[in-house]
Image (cartoon, rainbow, N blue to C red; front, top):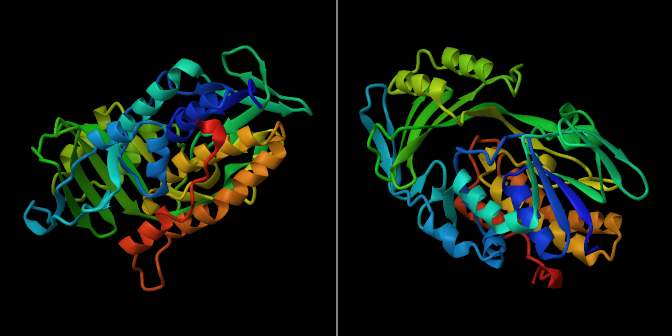
Length: 377
């Protein structure tokens, strides 16, 4: 399938990794991204188990390890800021500190992935797919701004609210499974002077937290709360901020300052903790990878790893498919399905309310043997 034109929707972890491996295997990738450039901000994310082999094969492991968050621990405080507990063994964002996992800020990772793919990839920033029409030979694609174009394959790597999934597979209500809570993340000054440290305050079903980022030069705020499913526009940021301001109005500690910073944050993110579950990740010449096809939710801690491994496997199977995209998509699903299922299970509490243990997380992180694809070099 060399010289095959592949359109990727989404320039985050899955899409950028896919672009890298596609151009390395001789494909011609094009990436369309709604945002005007790489999206900034985001939380600390983890690369674990088999996913570390993927970034090593990309030649990025040393750079990624050099950009690790280097968290020393975390503490919980009461409404007055008095410390209730502390741990130097684990953090809320990364789990156990003493292990081989790598925790890195999301936008640091995407910048590295972009640099690894940019010279063999066409990027269409500030645009979005509006329609997809398949025939036996290609997918006809219309964009909001770009002229209509034809591609051999289209891959949705556009996250929880995937537009490609909606156009090719059906409404997201058929595939999104709400897990009972919501999460907001945004950047702010490290005004608390945190030194590779995380601080949290819990008030009932709500948790507010702040942790340092980028060698303490900035910080991220996290607002998390349990709730019945809410009706909101996932593109209306003001509506989301108003929702959070109301929900956290009576929460103590630094919450008023965090809510004030939220109003000015250039990289505000808010969404439900949800999983994406589909029986199939392909429909003709259109496929899905990462959160678009099998988001495990941030609660699992495995979204980044699934995206990295999924992109690697998908390209490997396409390159090995001798032009048969249907067989390649089938094999991609066969290789990935058990790994996806086990990692999605991490997000579900046991009957007693407890979460997955560190041993279970390690097992799920390594629940796939990475194939050696000759086309990946």
